[in-house]
Image (cartoon, rainbow, N blue to C red; front, top):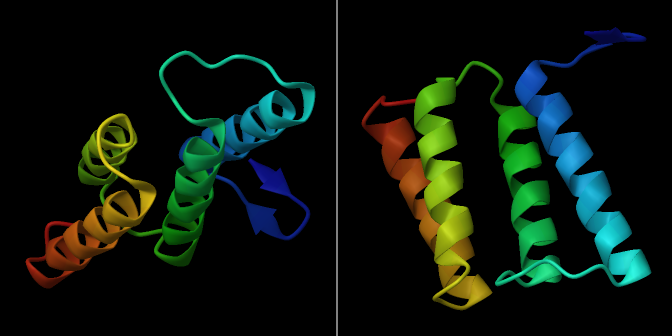
Length: 98
């Protein structure tokens, strides 16, 4: 989808909508079971930046990394989740998986 001079893939549109919904959940105090809303918003924004900076990555591997990272937020602190996300992303890039 073109929006002015920018092209948005369906994954970027989904991440933008997810970040807007998480922002509204924070603003209005909506309940999201099991998850911390600020941690989810942080992870969605980080995923949006990495997807935006590297648009030629394979979507399947990035999707699996995103799902695992989001579910890790249930069990370990945000610093360790962000560290896992970036280290795994770096290893994927070095091993040419994505």
